[in-house]
Length: 214
Image 1 (cartoon, rainbow, N blue to C red):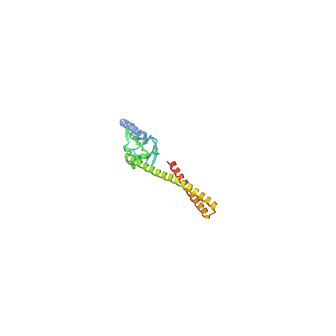
Image 2 (cartoon, rainbow, N blue to C red):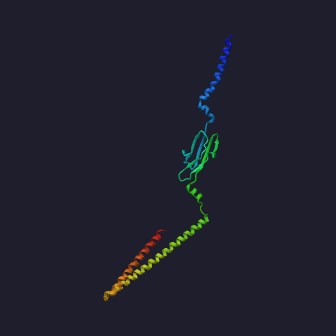
Image 3 (cartoon, rainbow, N blue to C red):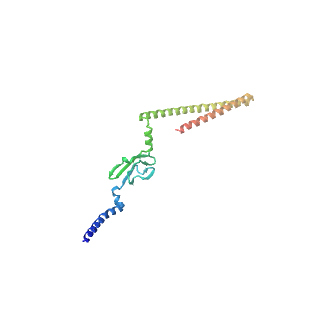
């Protein structure tokens, strides 16, 4: 009479054991447990490509880049590339193209463009006028110095020749009369002739420099 209840208890125990086995197997399988939270995948792109991608001061790689994260990123992603301005983007602005798949694209600006944005130039008309008048002023200044150097070279050259002729004339007179004053005058005129010749050479050198510097 007591075997029947014992059999029912044994059958109930086996049923409970079979029901508990799948739950235990699932708890021991971490892959199955993590299917509900597979993480987030990001694709980082840049124009132009090849930019370094930093997240929290850590280099993730270079674009184009696929990056898997267990959670959504919550800090700025920085794109850096030589000769281009750094670009900082928020992960929240990434475009979700599929479930848990986000695309973040940085359009990098050349450094020259970034500097122009910080210091905008004057209008094109003002710039053209300013450049025209600046060039005109420089040309006028150079022409003035050219004329001055040319005139100095000519006048100094003529003076050097004149003083030399006068010095030779005074020396000829001294040779004929042996008058000491003519000798002194000849020497003085030779000095002035040398000074004039040196000044003429300097003016010619300066004039040559002006032509070569253009």
